[in-house]
Length: 407
Ligand code: NI
Image 1 (cartoon, rainbow, N blue to C red):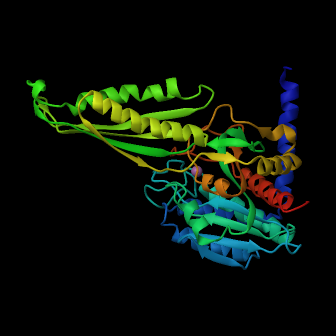
Image 2 (cartoon, helix red, strand yellow):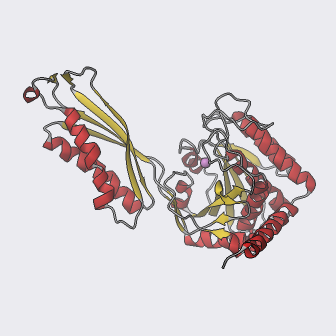
Image 3 (spheres, rainbow, N blue to C red):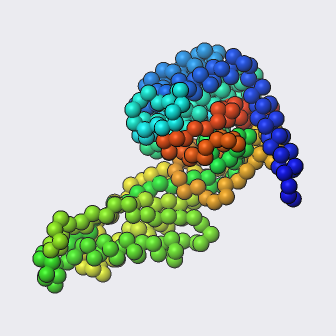
């Protein structure tokens, strides 16, 4: 296979499918969705501070003809769209809504008006395409009720647990969501079964020794040497202990000890992150960090105080929900639009808490188009193509229809 003709044909077919997604919406609806996204984009709010975002989204949902909107999880919302068939499975669609502490440099007319805060992870897109899905479902309901979950505080990995605690997902059979992805074109979707994002645990280790004069190490128990040994040794967890077929990362990001060149300090501290894509690897690495810190400390006659901070679990899409999402995306965009991640995503995503409890599929939704700058999420110039709003909205609505029984 080579030459420009086939790829030009593929591109034309993809653009036609994207146009068909846009055509599912009326001109007025398209304008409302774009306006919503730009309104959110111009007024980004950090995790747990999304009260303005919550008000904007509440108004947008009500304007969309979805009156049943309730506040949940402090700054979040759940909106319910009644289904056609009593007792049919209830489906949830989730969009996260918080922004990042990044100063925007896109120069867009609707760029952030909040200094140092930016929707650099596309959560303005996620919130808006969730509302867009609501527009389609309000007009043509699924078999079962659909709950739109507008979730706060994803960036700090806390919002999903509070949504679960609120009871907003009680009785839900399956949940779907997606993330913008500039590595894929508009009209391409990743909806794979299995691992999609990594766990995000962190550790802090304090090596307690006995300080003294740098000239007389024999009178001390040097925590700096123990820390240095640990930093080197800890890499063997991934290279020697973990199955080479499983992705994993242990990175030390903080190293801190001492204040004078000729003083051996009492303490040395390091902190780092542990990433894994399946629960067994997560457990192995967490336990490995603890055991290694303690054994290195013993070797160097110091004491290790190990603290593990729980992050989000690995996000593992369930086979049933992934099959529904593939069916939905394939029906709208063609099977050639279904892509896979080239390598494991070691980033975290708190949607993971949902798929621990129920069927769920988290998708990656392409936002790049020919001619656009390739600037990734969490950068000051991230600028996704807005056509992805309608691809995301149409795919999510279709997921809800298929998962709640028939189309
Ligand atoms: Ni994100």
